[in-house]
Image 1 (cartoon, rainbow, N blue to C red):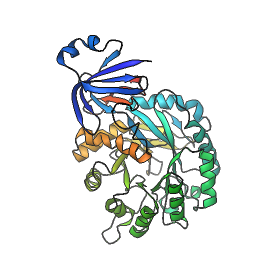
Image 2: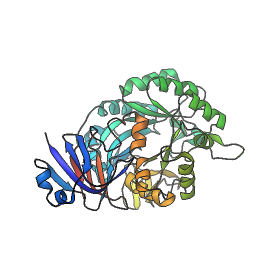
Image 3: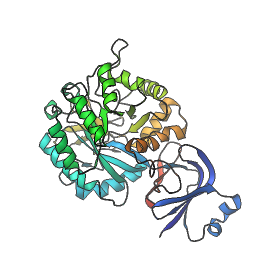
Image 4: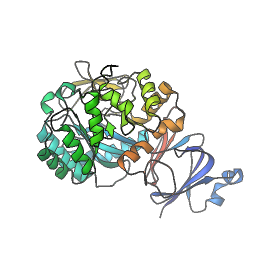
Amino acid sequence: MERRALLFRNLYTPTEHVRDGVLTMVGERIESVRPLSEAARCRPEEELEGFEIYDAADGIVLPGLIDIHLHGACGHNFLSADVAAHLPTVASGLCRFGVTGFLLTLGHAPWALLAGALGRAGRLASASGHGAMCLGVNMEGPFINPTRVGAGSPRCCLPPSEELLREMLDLASGSLRVMTVAPELEGGLEAIASLARSGVVPAIGHTEAAFEESVAAVDAGARLATHVFNAMAPFHHRSPGPVGAVLACNELSAELIADGQHVHAGAMRALVRAKGADGVIIVSDGTPLLGSEEGTYLDAEGREIRVESGACRAPDGNLAGSATPLNRALAILRAATGLPTGEAARMATLNPARLLGIAERKGSLEPGKDADIAVVDEGFEVHMTFARGQLSFHG
């Protein structure tokens, strides 16, 4: 079994800051995180005989990042029929950004296309290859309000029904982890309750729900708000709406697209102060253009999509997802909020792992957990990524 050791100066578990030590990996798991004497640091091969040794030098060692809202990457859209052929490329490419786990996210498509993609995704989620791991499926619709569809088409929205929900669960073959529902729709609260009973995390989003309807969704089992502030009724002091429910309900975790375009820095700061470091999950809302340089590109439908300041914009100027990967979003978040590195990192590591119920093996650097590790600099640029013990990126 392969044995690797990573020497470090600074490591975040992310619940504590550890200095001057070594993290050892045996196979896919973390064996230990422990101090390393100065003498051993000078001659590590003596103390770590039999280990392949890596040195994080002045880098910061974090748990691998988990992106629970990702529609595509590396030029590939998860709705495409050939996604299986391209998933290894995506899994490898995400490691450039320190991402070691993701939810394959589907939405904003006609039901026939969505159903086919969901069936394919259900099969892919159970496959484990190299690079970032597909942890399951996130369905962003189709039970969403057509008045808050965002960059999608209102024609892709469908009324909630138990029959259609059962079909989705069957197609997903146990891989559905998160699903967005607009609770104000007829049958919306029933769909949320049914998802919760099925072990799926219900999310509220793409919604015009009143505050009371949003709280009712929480009572029915909703535990996440999809990209807070975006594609939902805005906060007003006499009509707080879904944003007010996010701020008022501890049960709801808040997705935040921290690319600096989807949400103003002041709103990011207010959300983090209201929810605390444990209540926010940073997501990319990434598209096939994730990480792309600024410029104009054609999407799968032949539309011109402009990448501008890290965001994607449709021909009408509306936001159409993001091109900012999770590591860069963390840098933007920290600049906006002043959070310490460890607390910022928690929003892309331990918090999503807890939401998905996988914190016993992902989301922090502790013995027995998966050896998913990102080594970054002060600006969150990635130097090394280990995915389940394998060096998957070295910049």
